[in-house]
Structures are given as C-alpha cells and as structure tokens.
Image (tube, rainbow, N blue to C red; front, side):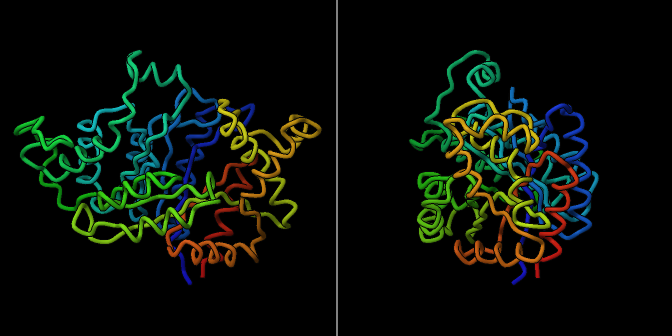
Length: 339
C-alpha cells in the first residue's frame, strides 16, 4: 500500500554547528522531499532551545512554499498560547491565498520552550492556558470570514472585524497536534485534522486515534476526518547502525521527558559518555526502543504496520541525526520503499 508520507522537520542543530546551517539543511531537505515524492513537510516551533534552529515555522513555511511547486507545506505546529487567534488567521489566509491548497495550519497547545522563553513571548504576562480551544474556534471563524466572532458563551466579541485577505478560495487544512485523549476529542469536536505524536506517546495511541475517528463531527470545519500519525524513524545499513544513528535524537527525547532544554544533536559517542553507567541509562534505551529503527529493505513493511495499526495512510516522519547525510539517507530510503 502506498502511504501518504510527510516529513516533520525540527531544523535540528548539530553540536558544534549553528542554526544557520540547520535552516539551510531544512530548505535543502524540502527541495529533496518534493523531488522524491513526499506528500508534505511540516515545521516545528521552538524558542530559546539550542537543539532546534527554527523559532518561526510560518516564516520557514513561506520561504519553502516559494521554492517548491507541488509539495504541501505546513506548521507542526504553531504554539497557540503565544499568539492571538487574529494574527494566526491573518498570515494563514495570506499563505492560503498565495499558495492555494498547499498550506497546512498545524496548531499545538504545548509551550514551545521553557519558562523564560514563554514569558518573553508574552511580554512577561502569565499565559492563560484555558483558552486554547477558544482560540481554535476564533481562528476558524476568521478564516471563514464570519461577520461576528463569538466566544464559547455565544457572546459576540468582534462585530464586522475582517481578517485579510478575505474570500480565500480554498480554506486551509487545519491539523490539531496532540498526544492525548483530550486533544483527539477536541479535534473531532471542531471537525479539524488530528496529528497524533506517536513518537511521544505510543502506549495509548490507538485509543486516542479511534476516539478521533469515531467522534469526528462532519458538520464542522471539514466534512471528512484527517488523521495523521507522527513517528520517529532511523534507517541504516543494519539495525545496529540505525539504532546508533538515532542516539542523538533519543537523547533529546530523554531530555524533553525530564523537562530539560534539549542539547543540540550529539554524536553517538558523546551520548554514550553521558548515558552509560548513569541513572538515566535504562530510561534512555527505553526511549530509543520507541524509535523505529530499520534497514532500507525493512522500513517499508514497518511503516505499513504502523499505518494499519492506526487506520490511516498519513504518516509524518521525524528524523534528527548527528550526520545530515544519514538523515537524508533515512528519508530517501523511506520514500524509495513506499510501494
């Protein structure tokens, strides 16, 4: 079965290098992705973090849209707590007008950085966490050019306010990012797509995705559900090589689990120095085991199994590696074996 494959690009910074290199790699990766047949590429948002080079996925998406002609480009995602619904709707409609049917608005509820970065983004004001779903509702209303914008109590808060450009010919696909049941049900309730982060939580994943498909409201934003599953993958000449190439990515995942700002991608040798013989060793290898590590000959079958497990052909592939050539080879092996 041919899968609808996308790339989740975090613009990973390699230890000893700089964000400028990571951003150049992202643009080169996008060009390769279009040439080889990937369906989409999505950019993440991180602030004040050494590990990832892009703090503005909407800007990176705009640049890549201008350098490609077919592939869908999106955000995965915009961290909603840091921005107004109005501003998100405005630039979303700009990109959807300039690049019809190519831009995907991925929205997330995570902070996108540690405490100081989030405070700086919000002018040192506390973030109201209870209004994320309200923001989603407002974004949808602005995209649809509704005359009045209502809050969740059906009270009009903006009368006659438009978000330019109006009359967007093809409204953008919206993906609601998450890894838990709450986000799955929110996506279903509002009739938007759901991007499930299986690389963060693969234990109760089927319960979440099944709930999304079962509860999807076809009378809302889109008439059909759109389920996407994001997985972390490493491909090498041997399974052992694939696992070793994934050490840097696994170590970043471990740091995130421990609420520590992730390092730039480390070499396998540097990770071993930090992990082996420490209290974190067992947890590190548990995290590593959740990454799909395969050879070029076996990766296609493994991804088909993931597709069948979650009942979707839409997979988003994350791969952060110390050697950019290994990362490119992973993506090339995946698309080459997508039969």
